Image (cartoon, rainbow, N blue to C red; front, side, top):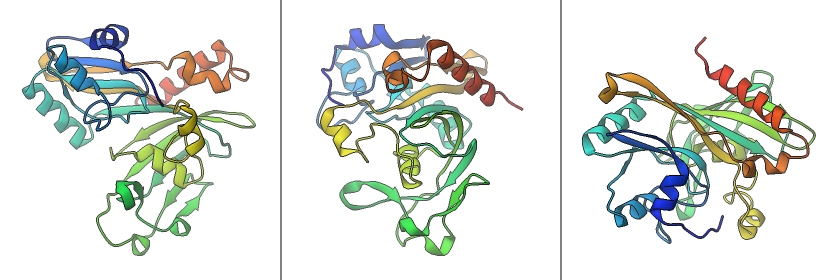
Length: 265
């Protein structure tokens, strides 16, 4: 997705979700990297140029919009990254696919590897992927995993809505691998709408990728250890391909249903 990168103050003022003495949480626009962008500007660089030092506690892809958590100091950053490493952070994404037919809920347990040109892929042949769609599970047998470095990866999802052409999913990555949700869904035949990794026409047209970091929950030691839950509902552009099928009230109900699924049993 191509875009003109705005200044830091403009981004900050438009997207801040939560801020205190230790963290800054932004609702990142699609089309700008968190950090380390080789061919453009990223949020960490923009902040540094404006005199603000930030340390991202995690990454979301350039094409992904939504919640991003930054620490303001290294001590806070260390505590937050440990939570991500221990998988005690609650992460929930919203996804639009241009497909239907997924079960109400599912688990994708497909190891990831890195192929040519540093591209993330499933560490097995496509035909080795086993599916039990009645049980909502996709996996590969241990003997079918390709030789070389690979990373066990698990994504759980719920289907929140589906019509004759699209589906809206609530995706919860158990592990936090690069491109995990995008690759997992594509390799089981349900790529994310507008994903340039798998839709070159969408990339050429500069279309939005419909993957949104919706909710993030973490423990805040600087707040007496209390749990912090941050929510960034998607903007109208995220829902635009579904505008003829989903009213504003229907979107509200869909988000309510998604939030209910995230409550502890």
